[in-house]
Image 1: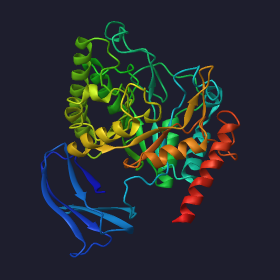
Image 2 (image 1 turned 180 degrees about the vertical axis):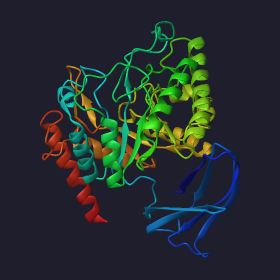
Image 3 (image 1 turned 180 degrees about the horizontal axis):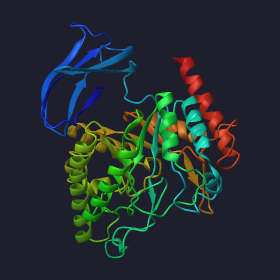
Image 4 (image 1 turned 30 degrees about the vertical axis):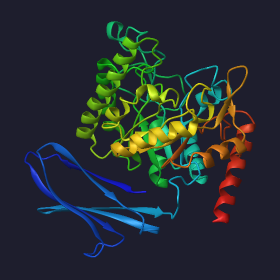
Length: 421
């Protein structure tokens, strides 16, 4: 599997600058130089430099060294990378997880929302530490705002946006009723210390809503989020929280709505990509979609993926009988991502639906089944950590006792996997 290396170059000065970008492997020597490019960065502007590195002959613990230099200027950044020899893309372990700050559904989140509401900033840091202990080093903050509205079923443009923020926003006065002052800051600051990566959820404007109004809202919120949190080393990229169906049509029931919503999606990501590249050029954009009805959008995915860096679908383990199998859907999506040079990650559902509607931890054998069956994904994230996994030493338990069992069972799984290598 190839490695996607990106450098965001910022020029905050009043004149254009010529810089040289160099990428080295392990050592800053002529022999170790992988990539070299001279670029011009306009005044008060940004550029993204991207290099794709084949990894077949680079197995082991290594360092990627990035040097940017110009007249009277030189900056060096390096990052460790472990390259594993494997015939499949997946490590068959969970690389990270969503951390919903408060579940959107009181019914589904019945077992953990009361505890989430009580979480302090320090307890969010504690949760990050315990995720790190089991190798869940990618965190997806599900959303920065809560707004329970749906595409075509709201009047936000006429009546204004009344969503509530999970952080001290200057854009909107509404705040979620949670104890933590700024859980986003807490998560990012702790992730900085541990070398973890965080995708910050820009939404929620409205579920499945990718209209022009939604795009403009996302631009405003992303600007504020970047201003507040962009200095964090762990700020890996953007997560667009609105989700969608696998058909990219928000479950439309007629052709007119289907075409309109699919076009909205393509235009949204074209606009948000251009905006985010100017704001933070090296930061990828991720979206989670259902794996159902994927063939309905076979002409749309190639256009969408031109401006979407990471597609992270869910639901492969519960495909409808009338649909493709989970493996078939994954193979189709993989081809489209490969053709577009985009990345396909797996949103593994670590929960089950109780007959009363709430979510509860999925048995470890079912999770392992999915980890081993779907082996084409570059990264595997799960939904979600809080309320589904609980380290027994955590100062507050999020969810029922079964969450502790799942944490221990998964911990044993990864220990056994490491021992067998």
